[in-house]
Image (cartoon, rainbow, N blue to C red; front, side, top):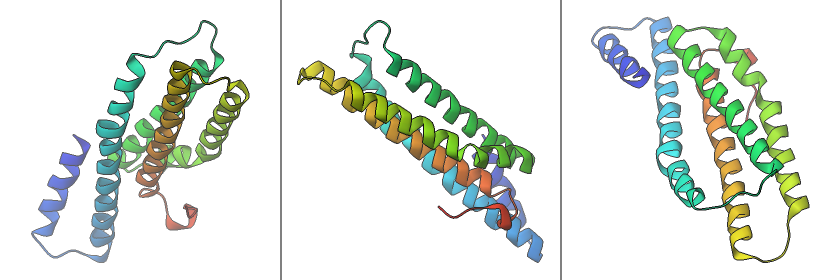
Length: 164
């Protein structure tokens, strides 16, 4: 929906001459669109496939890793919602919030990986499959957050955007 609105807007402004400001705005919106398409590709492809793999896996009662995975998912989902809001409304406030989540997301992912490494045990095929799915999930959440951050950065003044 946001992508369609952006593309419609870009089509309208392409019909006439652009001022420098309009040209910069068009470039920002095109960048946001590309990042949103990348994010959608991750969700529709990799994450959906991963969900299919995870569907058959059993979790153990009291498994703290599941809670950490849910926390990471919630944080990344929030970042995506805020990034879309920032672009849709042209508001730097939610964009700054998304960029500010960078260290939190990184720390949560690292904590999850460290906890999973501590609990590594044996060579039971079901257990190892569950670990692989979880690690893939963490990787996908990092990718989605990075794309959401790039979408949000479109709204921010260039001086506030950190490389990487």
